[in-house]
Image (cartoon, rainbow, N blue to C red):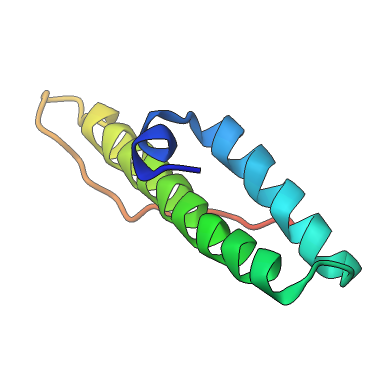
Length: 82
């Protein structure tokens, strides 16, 4: 996948593609050259996902307001479902 295409992906699309790559890699039947290519694509998709999550975190922080109208920035503590 080309970098400019990755930049246009939504979080959900990038995550779906990343999960597909991980599943294929976990099966262990991919030739080394293709495995390296998928790893590289997965790394790029991971960066897209991290960027989308960071953007969402910043938007959440901006939306939090105190009663007097000033911004109340709080640490964002995401929970991870394993």
